[in-house]
Length: 216
Image 1 (cartoon, helix red, strand yellow):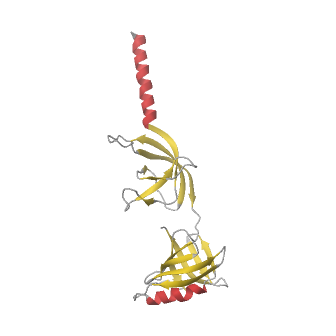
Image 2 (cartoon, helix red, strand yellow):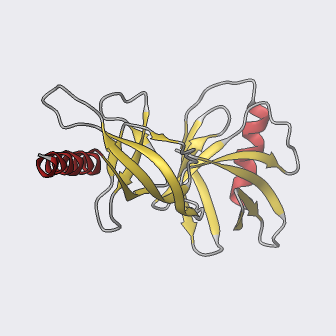
Image 3 (cartoon, rainbow, N blue to C red):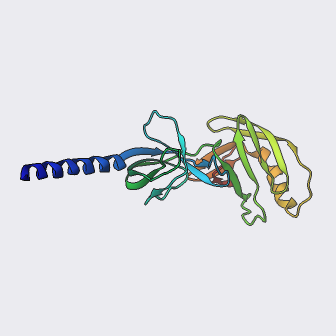
């Protein structure tokens, strides 16, 4: 009888251990440097994650308890995973809890990543409204602080040459800022990225404008 009871206890212990292994475990996940609009609610932001380096990125609408995400960083995380109870026909949504951050790498800034907000034009920093622009495929576009604009751009490792092709035609109280931006942008011949800042300079490396980075 004692042998039979011990066997029953052993079987139940094994089943309990196995079920715990199925419901909760540790794994490595990767988190991308930029969040995206959630598929089911575009007003919300979702992380992009994957479970191996060569896997595709997938949107993650859940949470990772204990993890403070900072946009602009790639992460390799060790997390504990448990499947939440779900009575619907859909697969259970994993619930993650951070065990530790294995790696954190800040994304190097490039001109064509995100937006640049102009905070200084010819040492004038008290701008009522800041010009902003983005760069992609030899084009520069944005807002002069008053009007939308579009222009062409010649760019290499250090060269920065642009011309504004067209703008909208609105009257604003920030016309003075617009004038400074539009008049001085063609004089920019060089650039330098320093930290989260972009310096736009003339051919003698004298600063014309200073910009700060903003995510999409």
